[in-house]
Image (cartoon, rainbow, N blue to C red):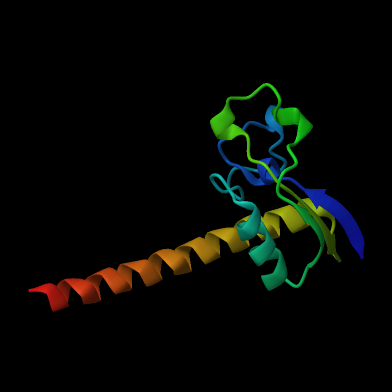
Length: 115
């Protein structure tokens, strides 16, 4: 199993590759949170070795505060880092879609009750 560090900036579609995005925009997500990445990693069967929410990727030192996503995960996976990051990006999108659908269903039910 391979161990590697995952920074949220590596999955952020708002950043260019110069500032740390590793995967293509078709796999990247906007503003990934550290807990979303951890949930996606667990869902994909990856082992989380370490989580540190206070660390900042050194590549982000010159960026505006809104693009500086803090946090770092050390993950153990059977896949190489690039493939694992693409899988994480896709899984985060799936999780966000299901959460959005769940919120949408709750809103419709509450509208009917208010009359």
